[in-house]
Each structure stands twice: as structure tokens, then as C-alpha cells.
Image (cartoon, rainbow over all chains, first blue to last red; front, side, top):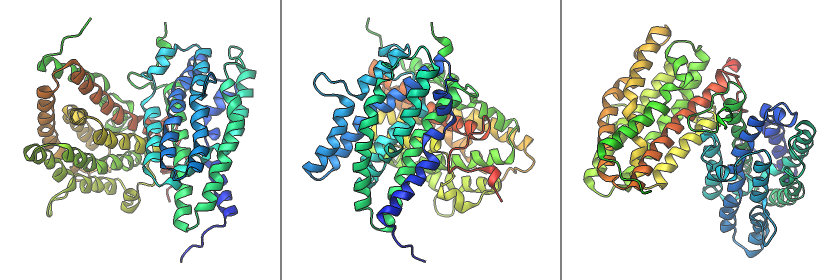
Length: 246
Length: 246
């Protein structure tokens, strides 16, 4: 039995269904974070590890830009490099994330060294960069589609964290303000790209798998944090240990 | 203050010290496994995930072989390809691992598809393959040095599993018999290679870091198993679920 390709609208519905099942807003660590049930050390561990993800986003976007065939497409994707690396005096997402890590009390040099991050974080993030570099262009674009689901998680996270942690300020969380407008622009372009170009069953399967892969990249980072810093508290050798802080 | 390079004997001692601190025989999942405190589903999850590691060993060894500059060195490393992929009627390590997964009751096709493995397993193993492909040759060789520590863990594992699980037979564990003689030959060569060629402080640091990296690759696989199948039992979307078996 051969399958028929999905219509563009069906493909979008299938993509959204993956998000509804696998996006990391469903992870228990996210729930603990935004409901205020984490202590400072746990929030620090999250911010520290997530810095490695943030700082690799423009790297994967540069790889993706390099693979796009026209100026028009490269200019579209280049916007993401500006968003994350900044331009002129305007700080990008990485700098704003460092404001967050400083705001929660982490030493900047320690954060930038990435020496205290979990191996699980490093392996997941590196897998994402390599995926974008090595898979088909269509899969690389599709792997960005988790941004379809990020406005919800960002809103939950910011309001939840401000309401529940009196030691976290709106300024500390300013990273997320920009993302609330940037993410929908980015994901609209990537979604249109995939709906237009994923026409065969094989291409559509590859697009759906790319989104599943990316959901696993995000989920597995929260898995690592949960195991090390929530339950059972099994910190791997060499990783950040809130209990050992001066 | 400039550091002096270590002598070859000091380098070996430093490598062994890393193993004493970071090798995965110290992981709680290993202790549970060999002391008989895991149920069938948990042992199956271990065997299933570890298959992905086993099946990528000859891939990383082929990358390494491709990077060696002389026939003599390539022939030395080629032995590992034979060990894992087999020769003539002699099954290699991958086939013997499939005997193990069948012995613990997993469907062979399901195992070979790797569709039920944890993302944490996939990301860690892929990181290892990429490390061997992309880093310096010296680092690639050094990353194999966890084999210095494997005879102990194998002996513990086999005797522990046979004593504690009456549903596991010696034949099921036959994978490990071959490794008890293969691993020391392999690690002796790699250790001599590193002691001979890592002469500067930078080279020695790189060798030590490569071994730390590889310890993290192994450790993080057990972290993933622990989180998903022991405590708190947080199985990621799409991964093998012992409770859902028919």
C-alpha cells in the first residue's frame, strides 16, 4: 500500500501534533521551573546549561545560511545571526542570556567556559549543530520548527518565574522579550518553506522526523537537568555542583 | 608559570587516575545491574540501548583506521574491525551483542531498527563517532583508552549477572568472553601510542581531555538509563517502554 503525500495543511497539522506530544513544555523540569518549585542552585544549573544551547544557535544558523542557494534566502536566515550575535551596540541573544546567568548569580567567565555543563547538554546541542550541517537542507530548516511552539512556553516561563522567584527580575529575563516577536517571524518563514518544498511522502517523513529529532534535543537537555539536579540528584563527575559553591 | 610535560609513566598514572574517578563502573546503574537488582524490563532497556553503542564501534574504528598514515598502523587498528564485524563464519561483537539482546527477550528487528533507544544514547554515541572523525589523531586514539579499565567491569558484570539473574545464561553473555582478551591487547597498543606521541603539555592535556570525554560518553548513557528506567522513571516520548510490552 503506497501512502499519498499530505496536503500542505495536513503537513502543518502533523507538525503541530508532534509539538503537542513532544515539545519540552511537557517536561516535568519545565513545570518545576515556571511554577517556582526550584531552588537557586537548580535555576542556576538550568541557566548555565542552557547557555551552551544559546551560544550554539548562531553557529547552526551560520551552517544553515551557508547551505542556502540564493541571496534572498540567505538574507532571510541571516536575520537570525543578527538576533543572536547582535549588531552594533545592540546585544544579541547570547549577551542577553549572559545577563540572565549573571542575574541568577553565576560567574560570567565560568558560564562562558562551559566547563561545568552536563555532558548530556553538550552531546544534545552538538547533535543539533551536526544535524543542521550534515542532513538535507529541508531537514535542517525543518529542525528549527520547534519555534512554532515557543511563544507559549516563553510566556509561561516569564510570568511564572517573575511571580514565583522574588530574586529574579524582569531585566534578568529580558532575553525572552525579544524572542516573543522574533520566534513567530522565524517559524512562519521556515514553516512556509517546508510546506512548499516537502511534497513527496519521503520528504514529508524527513520533515516530520527532523522535528521529532529537535524535540528530543530540547527534551533531553531537561532530562539531564532533572537527573542531576532534581531527582535522584546524580551529578556527573566534573559538572556544576550547587552544593559545592563557596 | 609554565608547566613541565609529564614523563610517559606520569602520563599513564594521570590517565589511570581519570579512570578511577570517572569510569562508568562507578555509576549506580552499573551497580544495580551486576548486583541483580534490576528487573527484566530494565535489563532489556540496557541491552537495547547498548546495542547502539556496540554497533557504532566499528564505524568509529573505520574512521580512525582511515586517518592512520601507515599500513602497519592501519593493520593494527583493523583488528578491531574484525573483532566487531566478524570474519568468515566468525561472528563479531555486534552479532554477539544481538545474541545478548535476544537472550534477554528482545525482538531482533526492533533492536536493529534502534527506534526505541533513548535520545541520550544516540547523542552520546554519535558524539563519540564524530570526536574520532574530527579531532586530532592523537585525541582519537586516546579516546579508546577506557579499555584500560574494562576488564574489571566485564568480570564484575558477567559474574554478577550470572549469579543474580537466573533467566540469563552464560551463552547470552558470551559477548564479554571475547572482550576479556581483546580489550587488553587493544588498550596496550593505544596506551603505548599515546605515551610515545604525547610529549608536550598541550598534547598531554589533549590526551587527558579525550579520556575524560570518553568517560562522559559512557557515563551519560547510564545516566539516561537511570533517569528513564530506574529513578524517577521518566521515559522520553517514543523510547522503549517495558510497561507497554505485550
